[in-house]
Image 1 (cartoon, rainbow, N blue to C red):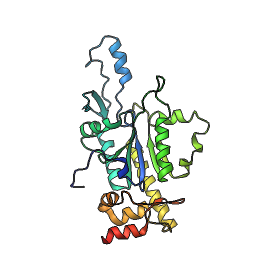
Image 2: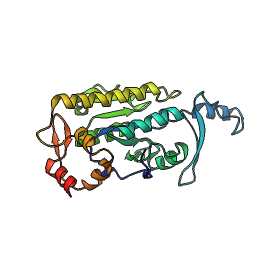
Image 3: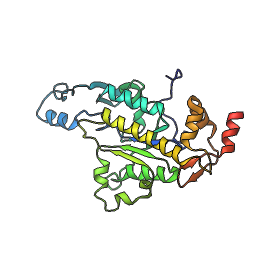
Image 4: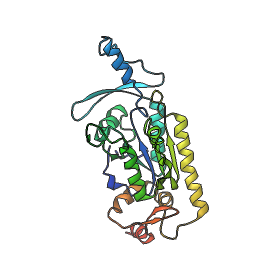
Length: 267
């Protein structure tokens, strides 16, 4: 375990796009509290406390207060959170929060998750309303912009967006589907499961195997190669690489010039 405390959220620019992007929603994915049921119960005259839906077996109800003073109750599964945290920590994963919580993810991570899943970044903030509505595709637009820039493999977990996206006739035609990807569309009353995290582990392992079979990239060092070489020093290398120029390989995605990697190792 890393003995140094991670920052809860980092700037998006801290991530080079050389790892697997894990785009995570919160409500319906990590938090399964049934707010609609609570609202229905409240309309029948029940008190705030009695209107709360029961906690599902295996989940814990935790309280979150944001920097703006807003208060929320969330239901999370500690085993799933631990498994996700281990997945991010032991693989070359860049955790990007893609949720209506936006910067309030900080409070969610620090309070509801007790610091687990720290060290990610906010992939996109919920845009302001235009003509009384929020653009329906804002999450997909943000994911597409990131992946089209980095070319990195990606995992996306969201309880609503994929079903909405599939109503578009060209949903699967985008170039981001040309790179390895994995999507999860959990039931909002269940959220991400341990089986889902195991599938993420298999996905990450398959990428490592594929890269080893293809051999070294001629354009530069791949994310898996760098991660295997540097181990715990990988975050330091990410910080060192800020502002450096990288290449995009059609086969391997974003790669680092080997001269830069050598300078880091010998500097």
